[in-house]
Image (cartoon, rainbow, N blue to C red; front, top):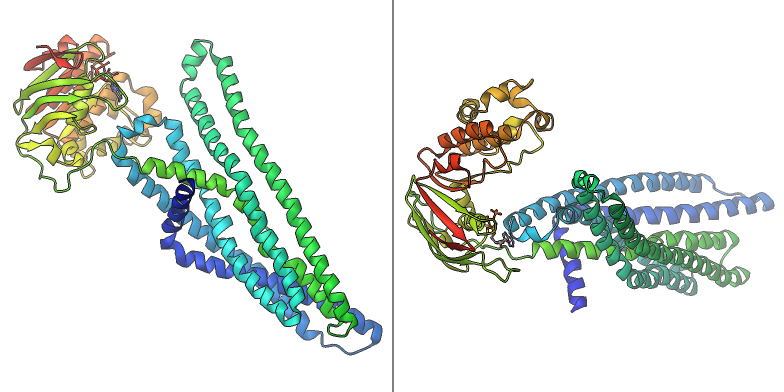
Length: 559
Ligand SMILES: Nc1ncnc2c1ncn2[C@@H]1O[C@H](COP(=O)(O)OP(=O)(O)OP(=O)(O)O)[C@@H](O)[C@H]1O
């Protein structure tokens, strides 16, 4: 089962790299060229220096032009090849990671908000950033170098076979130990700590981001020491597996050095008698010794890369676990077109959140005619917001039926339903860009006049125009100058721009002082004109906008 899951991650890593296969193969070709150029450079140099020394001693003539030119050529090939290889493999990997982030967001979107509520903000961020980034290891340090090592090793051993099978075999054994046995051992020894690193890093990130967000409360309630202690503890949880990985890495680096030196030594020991028997000459002995030494460049990075594979796999698993989650509501296979009539009807709707034992809504039924406004009141937790969440298709009813006009909600896609609805709540999220961009969000193709008109109707135009850069003011700067009431009127302007036939108000005047509440209520009255609306509120002012009232208690409609 575990092996199957591991294969699933590796298969996925290979599958997503398909579009970049051309780039990867070019990287493999260049990496192989660099390894071979380096081996050839050292071997020719060793041969050349020895041949020169011998000719100096014996006075024999030697052609030094060809080897000197070869050395220069190989040095240039090695340097230029390395540069191009890094350029190409990094380009391929970064393109892949960029594509992956976009794919991840596309997969996340249908999960929001219902399924994502189980993940903390810091955890999601960790998956989007750190987990995706750590996949870089798979491509830059693992796939490309492994393929290049395989290709280069085959060619090097074939080359040695022409000189002597025993030397070739010795080199092959050394390459197999460093290129396969050590990486295999590192992979198995490091799998557990790799997984712990990814998990501990995510926990630490969540804790830090939550601490920074709640800094005001922590300072106010004097909880800082406890926080520091818990961050230190979580830091220790991260450092322990990192230390273990460093130990494995240090051991594998030492063994790596030991086996490559032993192989090299064994190759020399085998070659010396061949010199004595005249099958090899002195320069060739040195050439083969240098060849053996340089050949390990092909495999020397693999143990560390395979050690990091445990971490990479865990990161891939966390990404897959999230994107494989079933959306809370699936779209119909053959959806209906958007309704043209906007009565809202709930028929015996029951709903319970998956992890709760108590239902949030029980047998909820009501009918609201197009253009009418319904106020819903009730104690906290009575199910008011849940009712609107179902209407927006963020969750699906367990039983009963919801319809808009003639269309049953089950036959409409979530997108279609949400295009028909605007929501104004007490929390208006402004993105960190200009005010204009925040407003265009509701209608990307709106003209500037439409923007101005919506802001005028929401009674926020004058406030925006007094800002130094008007609509072009950055929200970061504006947020310090905009009051809660002004931000809510920006939310109303957005809803006006969207011009959807159904409006949901979820306590939009909560927490405002009387004067501001009046301004916001007037703006809301303009928004509700001619639209069907559900208004969740306790505020008497806002209740005056409603034609009907419902009281909820414990998930049921009381009156
Ligand atoms: N996302 C959620 N996941 C699990 N349970 C939830 C979720 N949202 C609400 N609940 C639970 O469902 C019940 C109804 O909550 P709901 O938010 O609909 O009530 P509400 O009347 O809008 O309350 P409030 O006025 O405090 O916003 C409550 O018991 C609440 O704990």
